[in-house]
Length: 147
Image 1 (cartoon, one colour):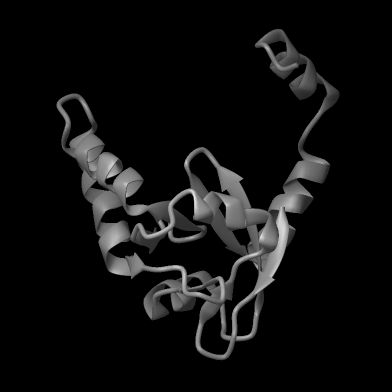
Image 2 (cartoon, helix red, strand yellow):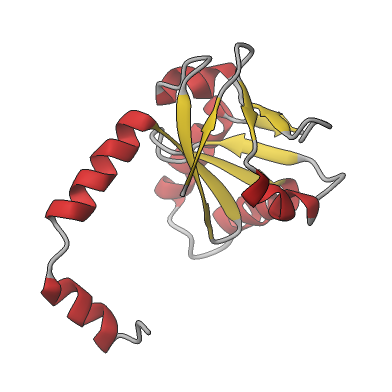
């Protein structure tokens, strides 16, 4: 989990810790959006296209596909990593997620994307992790293979 800051133009400065992830996708377009309207996600465009195909596949819940597709289109947009290691976040996404220009956000890698959350949501999630996780939860995770 790393903190980052949005500049006065809504560009996210990527931490040096994440640059190898972005270097692996150098020259590729990125897609920045939110599926749940709470957490932002930065996808390599090819990974995002895989998600779009998944939403269209037989057996995928059509209601869920419609909602996810709507949220992604409503808040998302293509992006590039500039030569100073910044990504422009779409204005509607910043507004919806409470990420004002100049605000601090939290970044972390999850599956094949980078997730971006506001400080407010980070504080909520941290509180949940501190107060809701029990020793029994850890034992269940270990019983399911947690190393």
